[in-house]
Image (cartoon, rainbow, N blue to C red; front, side, top):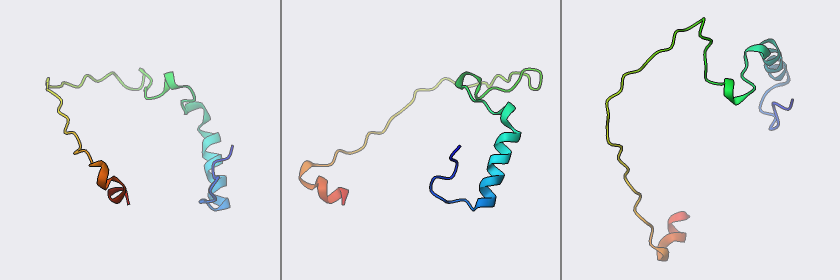
Length: 73
């Protein structure tokens, strides 16, 4: 498993990350259908009350083609 492709971590830190992944392998959700869920016997489901609302979107102002390159720079 290549967890440090950019070399950001020191060798000892890389060993620690690999150890933690191995130690917690059974509780990591390797499949997307198991992610973001707690086991029901640990936590009861929580229903969060919400208020109906109308979403709004504020569109960006288009950049005129004449000055597009200048704005990007």
